[in-house]
Amino acid sequence: HHDTTIREERLLQVCHLLEQNIDYYDWVGFYFRNGDKEELILGPYAGDETDHTVIPFGRGICGQVAISGKNFVVPDVQAQDNYIACSINVRSEIVVPLFVNGENIGQIDIDSNVPDAFTDLDERFLEFVNAEVAKLYEVK
Ligand code: SME
Image 1: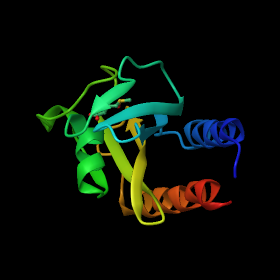
Image 2 (image 1 turned 120 degrees about the vertical axis):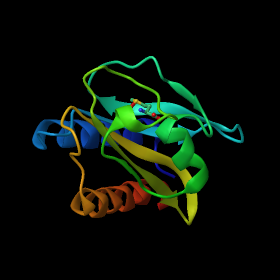
Image 3 (image 1 turned 135 degrees about the vertical axis):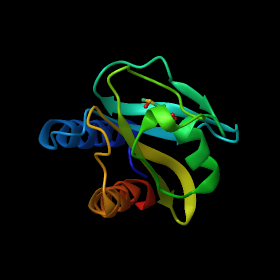
Image 4 (image 1 turned 90 degrees about the horizontal axis):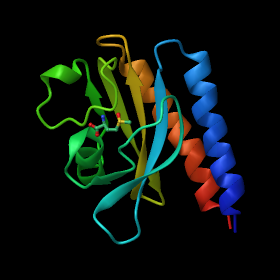
């Protein structure tokens, strides 16, 4: 069993690493399904504090990914009607689901202040990051 505190520290390190080293990653955080509830809870993150610590399934980009289990790339957040704004500076967003043993347990969410910032390379890279993060949950 992997200690929860150690796991949260690792996730926080991942958030800071990404936010500090990739210039168009302006907010990086993990959301997790809250037990059997149809809602997401904010986990470790790097960037400005957000009011959106609980997101019901279906709401915003994150809530939609909680249901679909698919990557969601948003080139222009202002063009989305089901979107939760965390900062007026954010122009684009990417959310990639986190699977552990095939189960969608949460997601990584990245906001950019640059319009249309995210490409296929970000999707592939964040899928890799999430696969590494999943190992923290799969170990006994
Ligand atoms: N924009 C997200 C909400 C989370 S904040 O970006 C940190 C959404 O629409 O789900």
